[in-house]
Length: 258
Image 1 (cartoon, rainbow, N blue to C red):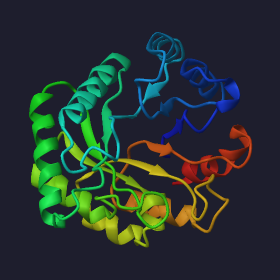
Image 2 (cartoon, rainbow, N blue to C red; image 1 turned 90 degrees about the vertical axis):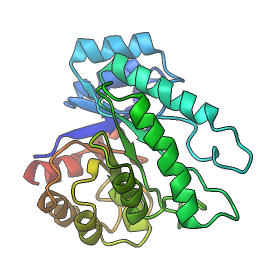
Image 3 (cartoon, rainbow, N blue to C red; image 1 turned 120 degrees about the horizontal axis):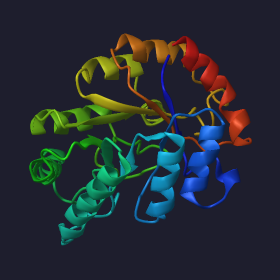
């Protein structure tokens, strides 16, 4: 049975704007884990208390900025600073991982050179935060639907970066939605990414709504995921087309059998 982690940016919005209230709503619905995006726009006191009161685990948060920091001439200092803040907040909130994005890359620079910029930047971050207890996961996102111009828009790109960094504290986030939307075969990608997948998310495709709303065969895909050796949490990062508690029913039943 996979542990499901509710994304409180998209789920349990019925509980209001406060992240702590959404954590409590997730706990009341039976979740023992949640994930979120940025920590810098949250009331950390409220969030920290809600996590402590409910015993819910925060499984991931994002480092910012996400996509624009590799435009030509951009000072990379804010990217390093954003990552440092994310690690600080992750440690405070007991979150074991920070999610990274590659940005869009430098125009006029080939893919290999662009990847080297990312490798150098994140390799430095690994060294700077060695011993923090927080790991980094690079997220490849699809460029066909949601993120045109994304540098790491293929799973193999993120795996190549992780392989080059070569540290146990650095891996990839494999998002089934992004992979499928990019036209990839999850079984192939997961086999090629063996040893590097440190976190997983999902949403149905097309539409990026709750599992069961699109064309994905979820029992089959979770079986593929299990066969790949991944047994960690799965983040539910989808835009619900129905009320949250209704939207989670199907994937809960599938995950319970996976």
